[in-house]
Image (tube, rainbow, N blue to C red):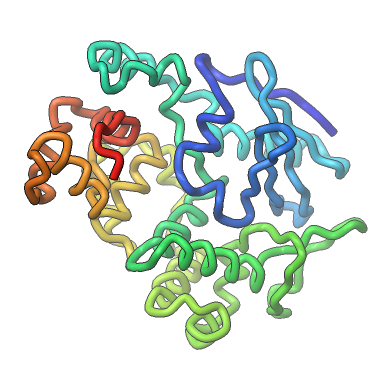
Length: 306
């Protein structure tokens, strides 16, 4: 099956896919043939499909080999639209960016959208797995979590995975549901999956969502002020200030900066002649961008390339 989804212009699938490192984390795969994206996805019905997404005039084309019901196609359309930010409007950001040479190309390059996972659960788990580790460690941990708990893509008509049959698989897998992760125990997540100290955080998150105690997905569309939304994110174990700022940007809130060692280095060389700076100097450098300061920081054309 194939169908087209429209995007608010300007739009570039390549810009979304290359917006940050999420495309390198399972089950995302960059589709080199089309310049687009592939991903194994489990639907609410238990159907497991492989999505292929590529850019067409006015939006993206979506393809799956499997036959879908109308409800399943609608579910996939919603997921793709969210992942790629198809309806996001950056006109106010572009108007400000036109006044700044360091952001002169953002509208022309259709920058602004950040690649997201279909669920906030997946994005929170992946963000937790970026903490206190090299990027190679994050890729390994995410890949291992998917391989142990995700639903496999199979050639025959798929059925819902037996949640109790935990096993490692090198076959293409969907990102695990909260219920699938909740079926594990901390020892397994620490040992076989090798999440280290992050294991209890991921397990508690999965069990809270699976039990209904935490409606994490409601935060994707909340009208809470950004400061209150940030408090909700910080209340999740394993999510600190840096992780919360990253998640806010994924959610389309750009009021806070994800300050890390890279940000400190860039701001130091951009405005302070290489002298050491702290988080306060990074915040001050972009404070005048207001609600758009996260995007201004993210797409800034840094003069220092070291």
